[in-house]
Length: 521
Image (cartoon, rainbow, N blue to C red; front, side, top):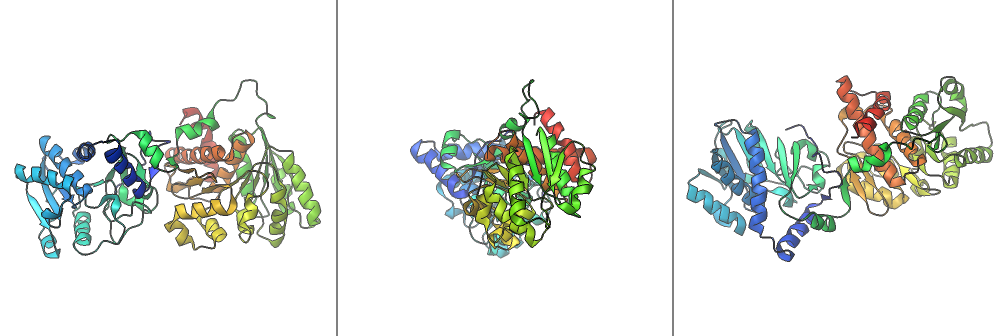
């Protein structure tokens, strides 16, 4: 499989489900009158360009085709490749007489040109296909986005033959055997070097294991007006430069620390002081003018002794009456512009009692993270009460809030995101490989940036601090969440590039936030 690489230059572009893409195609053909053959021809040329770029000189290219539109795209691409001097051969799954109208047109062209045609009707025929390395490149044009059930029989064997051939593979729209909606493998799936998809990326391209099978992703224009895609494609977008711009815009020359916003970070306990430091320092680095760290009483002395740029106050204190503690913390929160709650808090019943009483009383925008999420799993609605909220769960925290297994969250990340937003009425950042952000008004965004090296302790604390700073600077919860997610992910990419190590320490993310800001990306 090729290393997955998100398409660049598509921030703000729609992300469609297969059903939405079918609606877009239907509208373009039946309402706008764009000929289906024209769309197929445009798609084919893009496929051929990518295949030609990967194909070794003088080698044979095998075009593996199904009987639907995906197969038609592959057959049309074969004609372009042939005209550019490449030797092409067709491998067709099933009876040639069963091809759909547009695909049948292109098969007739292939037959008239006399290209070799391998018909893989059954297991016996597949067993007699050319041995590995007969082809120098394969184009997977079997199924596309329409597959909904597990592949079996000859189709499964043909996918195994593709994967076993040991050459680069260009997948058309979605690697065959992969669910275009969920990114799950339906029995078996083609392991592509790159995937060429049309008009917009699909949800399955962003949901693991989909990206691991898609390889490098190329989103190409086939002549469907962008307005049609946006109108019929829901409210999912790829996050990027436009979303980051509000966070990294230069401050006014005459600004001051009060105008930049004051963040209260309610975090940290004995043995978990690093979480408080990371969140607070990230907030400062992300532009907050003032940061106050409210740290549990047992850890207060250790944090305050080294907190050079931040102020410190006592956070939760088991020796103080609960009502007095809640009133004191509420007053601290109200004198700030935004609050970050949760990183490194003590996992004790008293913490839960404090948060249950405090959160609904905090009217300021707040980021709720880590232990604050864990403490309120029995009452997720509390997380959205009070002022505007941004929740930042990782899959384990999301699973506890929903009463799901972690594996179920990972299999249905969009469903989990929808359920969390509905339960809390808050903006939710579902962290992980390709973090998703959801808002109560239906907006959804996916981040193409980030890397596995960011899967280290403290990375989420940094994100919470960054989003908290953006809330304090006046961004809306949605704007702060999406900008914070992109900024954090790109800082992780910058840190990984600078260190060339497997893991990126959380404080390196903080150190690289300015590099993202200064580069404008």
